[in-house]
Length: 69
Image (cartoon, rainbow, N blue to C red; front, side, top):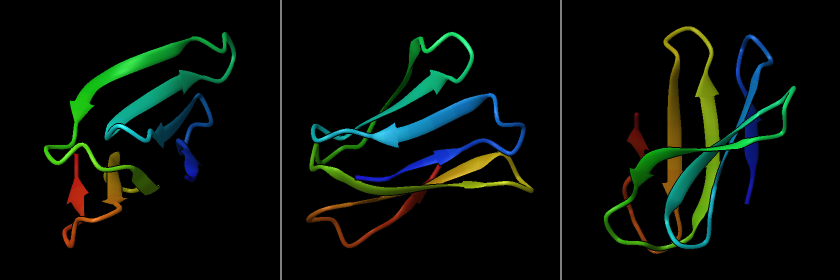
């Protein structure tokens, strides 16, 4: 699984094996639940932060679709 850093370098966001997308505060190290879980619950393989639109693209194992949030 991969992670990505926000354009302001304050957050790291990554996916989990149960389909959750989580975010960490870089300074405090606190994991902040995003409240976003992909429907299929398959592992999240890759995330990428869109620096211009403040969105995150997510791909997941077993799912032919990507999503943005």
